[in-house]
Amino acid sequence: MQVVIADDHEVVRIGLRTILEHCGEGYKVVGEASTGRELLKLLASTPCDLVIVDFLMPGEDETAHALDGIALLHELRRVHPKLPIVVLTMMRNSAIFRTMYQEGVDAVVEKARVVEELLMAMRTVRAGRTYVSKQMGEHLVDGQAIRSQTVKASPALSTREVEVVRMFAQGHSITEIASLTHRSVKTISRQKRSAMEKLGLSSDGQLFEYARTHGLAG
Image (cartoon, rainbow, N blue to C red; front, side, top):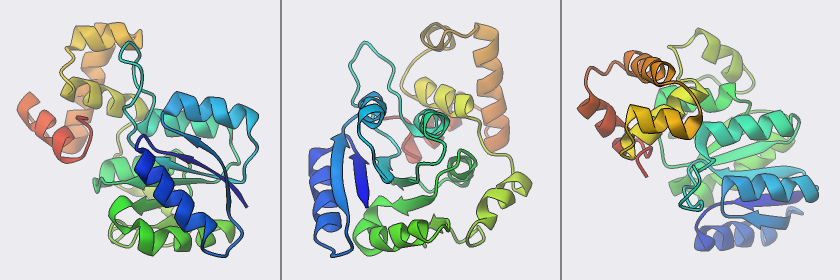
């Protein structure tokens, strides 16, 4: 099985490559990327059977808005609708976690448990099932039912709501976010307010703390 790895830390990519190519299960790493845009460019010219992607990869050019998180997963699924996607993350927030599955990912593995769970996750995906990291999936059901369950679960943040929360936590004003995303100030304000309502937050301070705690402020 040919695999592409995307992570903004070289040491992580080296570790993943080592795990895959020395496990004896026929994996071959055919490409690596350190940013979301680099990953999309790589996939356009490099055939593969599965992609492993870090959820947050802020290592873009300083003049460009990073393409990672939910926005990257959305674009990956749009351009490569059948490509199996394994997400690595340090977050444990249920709303964002459910949104990952709504975007069509096939597995989510906690970064701290990669050594124990990555190969298990990939075997599960190869068998046509959805995998949830044990420490993160206690509130979800097993297998393919995860994606249908998310519809009935508490509201998940939309792709654009996650983007707004992250940029706000990075210090951008509503006006700046509107300019960077080419949306109106009114739209950005509405998306920020909607995200806060879904998360049960009542102040900008709480929103910033939420983003910092769940890895969205980096």
